[in-house]
Amino acid sequence: ISAVNGRRAWEELKLMAAQAEAAGRKVSDTLSLVLTDVEMPEMDGYILTRSIKADPRFEGVPVVMHSSLSGMSNQQLGKSVGVDEYVPKFEPQRLSQTLRRLISRNVAPVRK
Image (cartoon, rainbow, N blue to C red; front, side, top):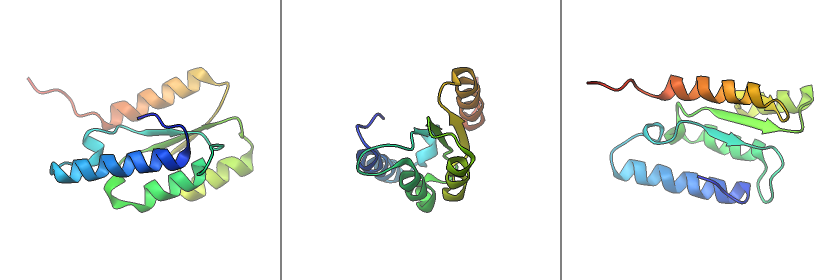
C-alpha cells in the first residue's frame, strides 16, 4: 500500500489485517514488510510502528524506518517502539540490501 500520511497508512493496514482474518490467513502472507518515514502528517512513523507492533495480527511483519532524521537518538527511539531496521535516507544501497534481506526472509520458497 501507499498512503499520504501515517494515519491513512494505519487505516489501510488495519483493513488489510481484517481482510486477511476474514480469509483465514495471516497478514504476513500478503504483507512482506512496512517501510515508513519518521516525519509524516497526522501520525508519525514512531506511533505507526508502535501501533503495528502492538497489534498481534502483524506478528512477523518487519518495520523498516527510512528517514533523514538519522541521529542516534532517533534510531534509539525507533528501536524503542519496535522498528526492526532503521536506515538513514541517502543510503539507497543499504536500503535496497535491507529490504531484499527482510523480504527474502518472509517469502516462502515456491514448491514444484
